[in-house]
Length: 117
Image 1 (cartoon, one colour):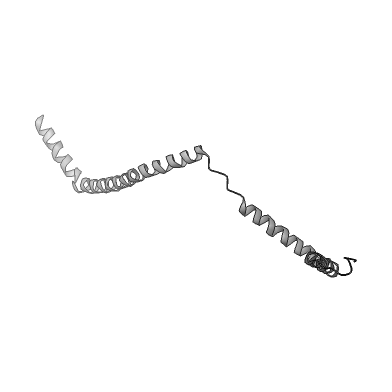
Image 2 (tube, one colour):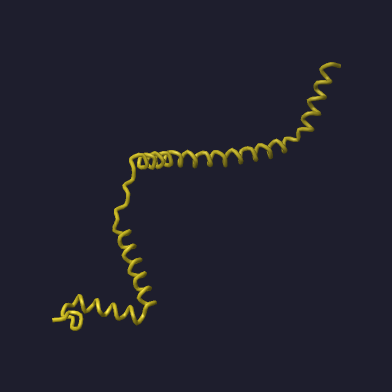
């Protein structure tokens, strides 16, 4: 009984078909081998467990989250104060301009002169 001339095993049949395909289409066989290798590599990479996050990294992330939750309301309050301070300065400048300081200074100067006459 010669196994090479009449394959009786499904595995040997598949092997002989692959050998025949590789001889008939060498470029296709190389591309198929590369594709199978990439697929197996990606599968192995996807199945590997992710490295566990270190304790220090988790603590730092927690500290960052807590500081952000504290700082966000403070920043909003500072922005509100800045806006109200800017509007107060603007209205103060407008009021100062409306005082007509020149007239008031002249009157004060006249009173000062009258004190020493």
